[in-house]
Structure formats: C-alpha cells, structure tokens
Amino acid sequence: MDNNDILIRLRYALDIKNNDMVEIFKLGGIQLTKEDMQKVLTKTPERDEDEDDSIFTDNGNDDYMPVDNAMLESFLNGFIIHKRGRQEGQTGTPPLTNEPSKNLLLKKVKIALQLTSEDMLEILQSAGVTVSKSELSGLLRKQGHKNYSLCGDRYARNFLKGLALKYRK
Image (cartoon, rainbow, N blue to C red; front, side, top):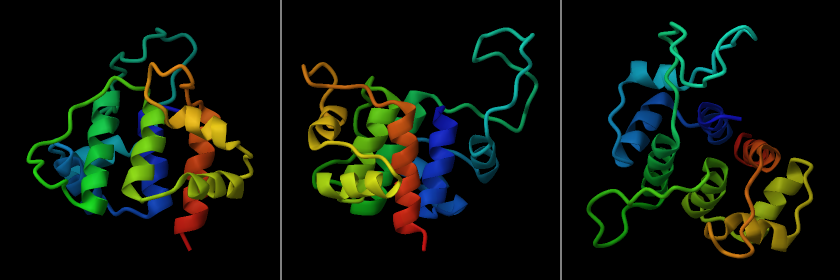
C-alpha cells in the first residue's frame, strides 16, 4: 500500500471532497491544483514484469503523481489544522518528521478526529482486526522508543476500512 493509496482510501473513508483536499494540502504547506489532485488520487500505474524495478521511473503516465512521505505528512498536518484549527501561537506548518507513513497515518488521524485509543480499537475491531492496547500503543509510540513497532499494511488498510464503516453512513 503506497502513499497514493493511503490518500485515496482516507478520502473515501471520511468522504472528503476534492476542493477540501486541495484546501487541506494548502493548510499543510503544499499548493496543488484540482488537476494535480486528480493525478494524486490516481492509483499506481500497472507495470510489466519486464520493466525496471525502480519505483520512480517515468513510465510516461501523465495522469499519475506519486506522493512521497513528506507530501503525505504535509497533508496529514493540514488535515489536523482543517479539523481542529491552528494551535495558538503557531503560524507556520509543523516540521516534518522522518517517520514511516503508516505510523504517521494512525497518529495524525487520531489527533485530527480526536480519537481515543479505545475508539481506535473499536474502529479496528469493526474491520475484523483484534489488536491489544499494548500493540496499538507500540504503533503510536515515537520512532526510536524501545516499544515502538512498525505499522504494516494490514493495520493501516483495516484502520481505513474501519473509518469508512464508522464515518460513511
């Protein structure tokens, strides 16, 4: 699951309109047009097995714009500002970290939607995944902490699926 897929699924789960997506990116410090947004919300182009294995090769698809970790983090920072407003005394955008995108997704969406750990456990449970509090705590810890654990595709995908079940009615 790449960063474009994360954005597509998050947009669907929370029913975010394209205009709001552009505004959220703007709040996060990235200027995108509606046309750029369509390219970002396009799934990763299919590749032949004979092609080079490099992820960032230009395969001539002008309808696709890859999202790197910094761009995803900027979107998530903008999402927090969109949902909760700016912190008092903060004028710029928050500094970017070098954390894996799936862990960032869990942390930043938790902050933006004001979810408790119990809420997150319920969301994952609704998607059919049973996670202990200590497992979830490890996913939400700061990178470098002794109990930090890397969030895999399974947790991220099911968290987004659970969000869709909860917020799309």
